[in-house]
Image 1 (cartoon, rainbow, N blue to C red):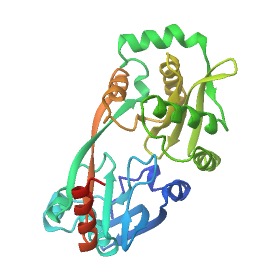
Image 2 (spheres, rainbow, N blue to C red; image 1 turned 120 degrees about the vertical axis):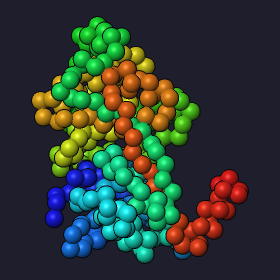
Image 3 (cartoon, rainbow, N blue to C red; image 1 turned 45 degrees about the vertical axis):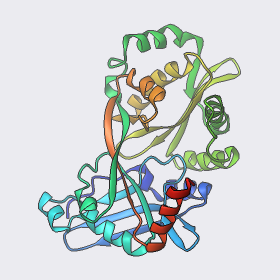
Length: 299
């Protein structure tokens, strides 16, 4: 059997069990194994009335899936690992929403089974390229203002960074996601496991920008990030790239390109636009009726 090529940190039990409870979910693991293929998923699950639903936990861009290699002909036959995974999920859950990691590019097996699939986008940075791909303005800002800040890894800074994250949502009129104290506890747990790392930019005692990096087997993630208005985040990202290069991380996934102002900030860093897939299914009559009612009444 070929080795899996879709493993991410979001399928790590330590990640899921830290993050799922923060939004009323619990971790559940589904595995389908046949002679020629392996398929598995690490899921956030919640019960909504009589319906058991698969839903992404807070701050989780991708569903953790594990799929062995397969041939295109298997997709046409419905025997590929993704189709096998879908079959297992359909028999267990009443409503399903997956965000497949960018490495999963062929989702026809889900379409053939009646799933609704639609594209989403993220930006990814080549860590080895450093600042060479940044726009001239972004490079100039990082170099000009770099001496104004003290940057570095700051273990235990999660609570302060999450406060900046929530302040950013409030400035833009959004609702801050999650309870700050519970998010901090979850991040500290992931720090202790070596999966998360806090990097900060300070001016004296004032925290001006912070990023909680999440580290996976094939990429690191710009996971939670917040800053005060000004150049601090640009400076901190430059420092974070140096940090990741020293770790040997090949890719920094900037986690999303679906909000125009934020997407433009990421584009100016020379990031590569990457597509991934949202896939949903309401296999149970109850789930379909509930979804129709929500559409009808706008809830």
